[in-house]
Length: 395
Image 1: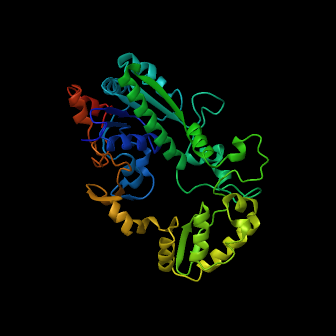
Image 2 (image 1 turned 180 degrees about the vertical axis):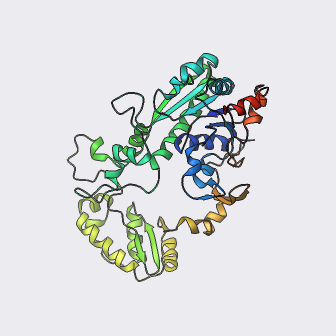
Image 3 (image 1 turned 60 degrees about the vertical axis):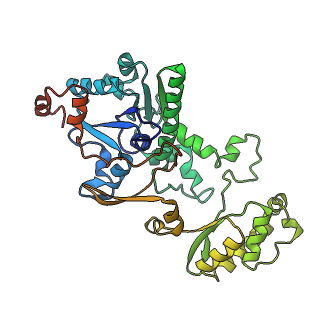
C-alpha cells in the first residue's frame, strides 16, 4: 500500500453505508481496514440491491480494500477478540444507535482504557442526546427531518420528494473521513486520541444549509428570493436529448442567447446580473425563448455551439453510458477488474489524485469472514480457532 494513510490501522465495526463507505475511502488511501461482521449474516449490505454470485454492488463499493473478520460481539469471547483488534487500531468506526456498543463493552471508554491514543468515530442517525436518539435512521428518515424532502418538492403545497439515493448516508461518510484524518493529524501534534461523535442530522443540515436554506439562515430576510440558489433550474431539451446549461455572469448570458439565435439580450434591463435579478420576469421570458430554440437543434450541434461560446454545460449522461464518454475515458474515471465472486466490475476510481502518495482501489471486497484466521494469527489469538468456530464465536 502506498497511500497517505499507510501504517494506519482501522477497525470498522459499522454496517450498511455510512461507516463502511468512510472506511473504504480510508482503505483507498492506504489504511489497513479490518471489518468486523456478524458470523451468521454479516453486514446487512451483503443482502441489499443488485448482486452477482451473492456479492451486492452496495457491499462491494463500501467494503473494497478491507479484511473481513466474522466475530460474534454478543459472545464474551467474541467481544474480547474485538477488543484485541481495537488495542492495535489507530481508528475505530461504528454506526450503531447510541449506547449499543457500551452494552457490549466495546464503546469508547472501554476501548480507550486499553488504547488511550485511539480515535473513535461514533456515527448515528439522530445523535447521542435528545428525544429522537433511539430512533432508527435510514437515509430517507434523515432526508425527511433535515429538509431534503422539502427542498426537493415542487414548491409550497406540493408533496415532499426524496433523492433517489442515500444522500445523507454518503455525506455523513465524507464528513466522517475528514474528521478522522483531522483527529489523526491532531494526535500527531500531541493532542492524543479522542472520541468523535457525528450524527446524520448534523451532516445533513450542514450540507443543505450551504446553498439551500437561504431564508432559514438569514433571519431578517423578507423571503423575496428562494432559499435554494438553484431553484427554478430546468434542463434544456434538444431535438434528440437533454442537457444542462448554467449562466452566472453577463458574458455567459449574452453568449447563450447568441449561440441559440435569441434576440433581446441587449435590453438595458438585462445588462448586468443586478439588472437581471431586478427584472426576473423579463429574464424568464428570454430564457423561455432559449429553451424553445434549443428544441430545434441536436445535442451535437449544441455541443459545438456551447463549446465555441465557452458556456458551462454538459449533456445529460446516464450512468450506463458515462464510462464511454471521451472525457471520462481521458481522465480515467473508472477502473475495471475481475472480482472473484462478482465477476466483471466497473467502479469509479478514488476521487482524489495524490501527487506523491497515490490512493488506489487496493483489495477486492471480502467474503464473510475471509480474513478471520489471518487477523487472529497476527494478534496471536489462533490457538483455539476450532473451539471458537465450534461455539460459533467466529466464522
